[in-house]
Image 1 (tube, rainbow, N blue to C red):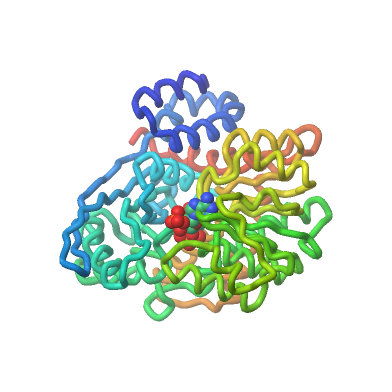
Image 2: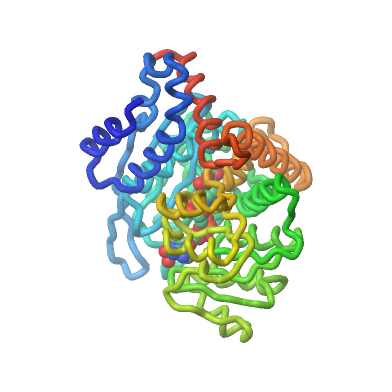
Length: 445
Ligand code: NDP
Ligand code: 2IT
């Protein structure tokens, strides 16, 4: 495989789609060796077929605000690959959403979903709609208008969306309500549903819990655990919240949270009512973390700074893509950080990953670490198909096992001659092999 030539061709076809090109390059560089060892992949054009989405659907989303003003947003669904199951992946509502971001997320989702061992293909969607500052009725009208187009493209055996940034339980409710009305059926077409109408227990916590289960496996593999460890976390959303809770349960101390306005440092640890306060902050729709430092006076706020300058043993980036750069990685290495596990999707830049790996920091990528969210989505689909609800303990036990199995797959495919586990390589190779072998079986379609 000639990675440079493939990337050059892809760049010509999709100029300026930087996040998408970044995600594809990382995977190709990791799988190059195993690809070259298996000439059947080359002759079936697996890479050429894998790096382009099956289809990209865009649509107009008109809606009316509370003052009667008409707005028009763009809606998207990227159906990337369905070799191992129906397209599956979240919806992101954020003003930064564009095709490059959704294609990177959809591409990553293929390998992440493959790693879960559940039958799910990869997809992603969303809109450039900004939920910040919108009223509840505006959010509802937007979701209804969005679903008026999306419902024709999805189905419980075709494509199953869920949440991501800006799409949580409330939005899934409004989207599902409209789908149910249009399709005249009550099926598992979305995941992250409310528990009263088909949702799974533990889904809200799953990404954050899974992130910490994975990080704990990394530590365990080196004879360590979370007890007494200082942990820095970025973000203060859905993923960060679950991660903070689980780190506390395992005996670690979380000292930071962050938002787009900067980070808060709380040397006493973010526990108890402070974790609940994080949810309140998030629900305020203002999306800033500064108020945390007014509420809890021992905490300090650092405007427009990243939490990676704080000394820690473990760092969990849980906010957004490319939020941990080379300089941040150097800070982490110099302060003695031993493990960086990505709760968000692609939060570390390629240059940051290089610095961390060079320093032999135990670095694990989002597609392995945060797979717990979509894994429990898969378990929600199973519960919906069988029309049963499992207990929280049962879902949590399955989540735990899935995360431990993903860790083992990374170790199997990513350990080098000196015993260092390259989790990026391990996750990409393990995720890729299942999809590529399925594509071989299915013919050129
Ligand atoms: P939330 O919307 O709950 O929280 C993310 C928030 O982080 C955004 O609203 C954004 O605010 C904020 N943010 C943006 N830039 C920064 C920054 N530089 N520093 C700190 N915060 C920032 O989203 P989730 O918690 O659901 O998602 C977080 C990450 O986890 C994303 O990468 C997502 O793709 C990933 N993920 C989510 C899963 C899920 O189940 N929800 C599953 C797996 C991965 P603003 O709007 O102001 O930019
Ligand atoms: O990035 C992700 O894995 C998600 N946003 C969750 C996707 C899902 O279908 O649950």
